Image 1 (cartoon, rainbow, N blue to C red):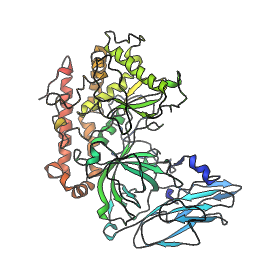
Image 2 (image 1 turned 180 degrees about the horizontal axis):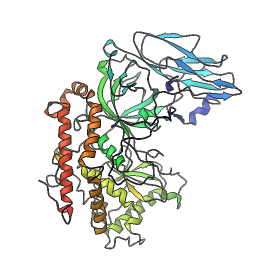
Image 3 (image 1 turned 45 degrees about the horizontal axis):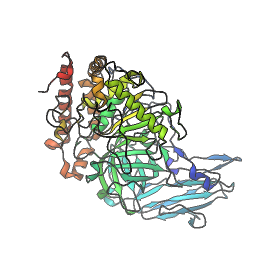
Image 4 (image 1 turned 180 degrees about the vertical axis):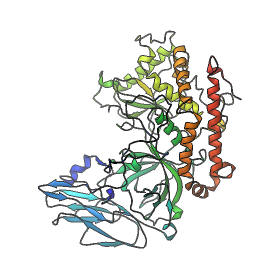
Length: 595
């Protein structure tokens, strides 16, 4: 079966494609359920109710991208397609490439440098050609029916030292004709993304890729961007232009926006983010799906060798509005009155990015303290209509005033806070941050979302590399105490920050919170349930971990081995779980002190 790297984009006219969006998702085998690796979190259906946490889930139903077929269109009984044989991927020495179409009258144009194949200017195809270097092939077929089809696979020539490289993890190669970005900036650099899945148990660079697409890449992260192992943001692009194209990457639901997390200094077990996201999904709260991979980053059109190896990365869904991510209604610029103006909104409490101002709200005339501003995510700040800004500000102000009142009702609207927020969602969000002893919880990377006509929800959870007894940041070293405020002011006070102070002032909320915590600590957050997830991820990472440590020798495992690093994480989780369980025996668990 032809690979989905033979992507074909069919348009009435070439210009008509420029405003469109193309989705690339491989067909599924409905005869068998797909079981995710531990690095890929099982995720609840949007709008589903949370579980009671008693039975950890071990599977999810997601599409696979390990195969696919050429897209075709039937016009007047003729099938238009454009197939590249072989379908991209790695090769040794040289490779013969053939461009084929079922339309005998089609004229095919192509380029080898990643530039668009403009008819009359690009090379005209007249037979197979040989590549003896890495190349980004972009081909266009002009069909006799006035249609065009396109393909854009990448061919990666391997250095001798990389020929035999294989892994139990998926392999990803980010390759560019230009240089690799080394610092944060707003624009994406043009790259290609080649993905090889284990088939069935191991992935080899020379195997046929599950995916070969054009993409944009840029460095991400506030403090993490300064480390030598760079974290990236990725956009997958269509073959025609640099517009987003949805791709079912590594079995996750099709989308165009992805994050490549680069665990290095703090998380030397490589799994802290994936672990918390997995636990979140297991208790019924969406968090980004993840997959562990080994990544190569090659630049300047070079062949791919072991010197391009950059170690273990975590491919993560970027938090954004999407039916399979944060399922909120798209807010249009014309949605300026109720009920339309009520959603959907995705925003966060966080540092502002370049060009952002953010906004402050909800402090109830100084009653509550927010260390960071709220930042618009979707819709973004630029061009946001004033009625939408005002709606969100008014909502947060009304919530703050309700939480500051003796009866927990807003003196302005009469609404109780539980008529504004999804209390259960807020409780689960808080518990996950407290369980991991996240020193930046609620004040940085703290997401919120609200659908049209719905309640304000806290989440999804994000950013846990500095948690759970990590290296190089002592704020989460002690598995006891609710937070690290007994030692430093540079941490979140989990019962006092922002809106949380008002919530924990309410005895009804406290009863709901600690009752839910008891259920979870006996279920999905029990020792056995959490260690099961850790063990599953450890099994995935055990082979690649030494390679990552060798690549980054200044960031080796504590106590000398990956096994020891996992032992430290497991011991911390056990002590944390036991301490929190013991605190529930007190009349007010907030009074519990550390050991």
